[in-house]
Length: 510
Length: 99
Image 1 (cartoon, rainbow over the protein chains, first blue to last red):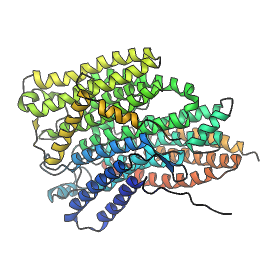
Image 2: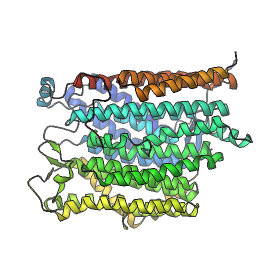
Image 3: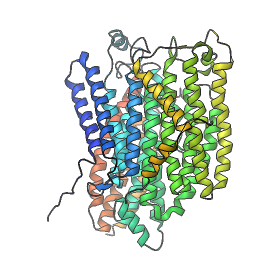
Image 4: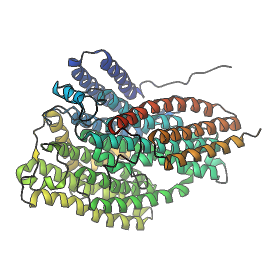
């Protein structure tokens, strides 16, 4: 029996190879480099790899190819999502590299295995050790995301899903302060996450059983050539959607979102909230449009229900939150619903609006969590909203930056959020889902209330002795914050260049 | 024997695993149930490979085993950390994050 190795277009997948190589070297650095040089080497590796990868993605801009035996698709949407994931990862890694905000060190426990409150932990903190294991984990997570958006078969998609998730479970549990809730968040995220990926995998098995192939293009061919729909296929599609929808955090797969947002180290939340959502939406779009485009009428109702449930539940539950990180978690669930409205439209306009929304949301999120990590009291981050009273009078610039992000998330004109919501709703109306848009508009009104409430608390109440202080960050956080403000405003004032870019990168390769 | 029976068996195993995740309280047992679900999917893949007459499903099964091993490493690390902190592996006890 002859074995013909598949031809691989190494240049097309070079952005991923660079990240992977850097991740492996980064593990070796962790093992062999002396402690004093590790942080410097790791940061050099991480930033070097991300920037090289971004350059390679830009050089690949006109590549449209299926490679590695048809399992990796490098096309317009893949490159667009990869590019935005890498840019947001650079900003998110900036937040993680910050160490002047906390007087003790960075946001990560100096030794994760030491018991919280133990003598060992105290000694490690006292010696000023910084934990650097988070860097190889970050690189692996980014690699998984880049693979996830370009995966064109079920096996690669499953492996990429796990390569994203496993490092993030660990990173969730690494907070330096409030370690108990950090560990608890990691446990919940892990157990629910593996539960969801088991569903994804069994769904993949059913779809494979139906079509005899794990390749998206071949699955699509089988679906169009078989006259009747099979129950195995429908159950398979439903179970497959659990994987990406869990990562997106849409209702009813949303339980982990507020817990992880509250428990995980804030820089990690900033990083993952922005990038993982892009990756998950990228994968979901490819799965539904490329593999299951032929049975659109069967999965569209699921997306409608999930979208409306996410919008309503997310907005209403966010109203009663008193913890800013938890509030942002619930607000994300609502945002996931808005984005799914665009996906449910299942038209080129819907596709474009989904991409625009998820990318603009990513920048606003990184910025929001940059601000959250800077607002502190004597116990670390002051996440309780009571401590935010009058912050706008004490630190107007930071409060103004946060207001821009919150207005953007609420969808107020002249911010990226308005353009995204507008595009999504227009696409849905054109596709005939006007009732979904009505739910969406009502939910955005509710959402606007709690976003604006934070702004009111910051600017229109008097500072008390409880009011937190804004720590002075180093260049890492400042750059991330400034870039996020700039993108949020620019996408709101003149979105056209980006929309043109999205139109150019519109077609999935099949 | 008809390979479709193995698909039914895999569905049964998957359901047992899913119920185990939902009703058991010990994190280790919950985790074992998830592994059972993954292995049920493996069985389904291999049976479908036999029925479809190609090897894709068997290749997937190998990859899933590797992924499951990686999952065990990460999962046990998290569960052991929780256990050391709380002296208990019950998933009902960590309840600081709610509502």
